Length: 114
Image (tube, rainbow, N blue to C red; front, side, top):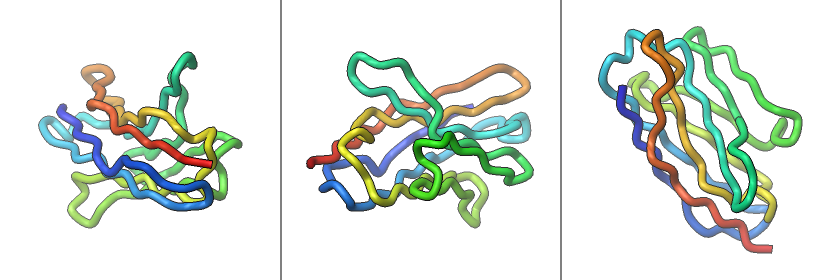
């Protein structure tokens, strides 16, 4: 499974960004897709999860602000981020949980200026 994240950039606090994760390869083996982030000096953390049956999961600190969804072509997963805060600045990664293990895409940098 290969994943390609894109859509990061610089945005002002209160603004929005939409990240995309293009998924290819053995997609039949995917149980779920997760969006994670890692800020400088911090551990990588989950910000959104989407199961193969489209059940979503969010940690409390992004609920109501972030939305994960699947594109019509089913091979792209989006992360819509609204009301961004300086604390959301991080490298964002998408991850596939598959029957063969976990696969990571390269990250995309999100910088929120206050």
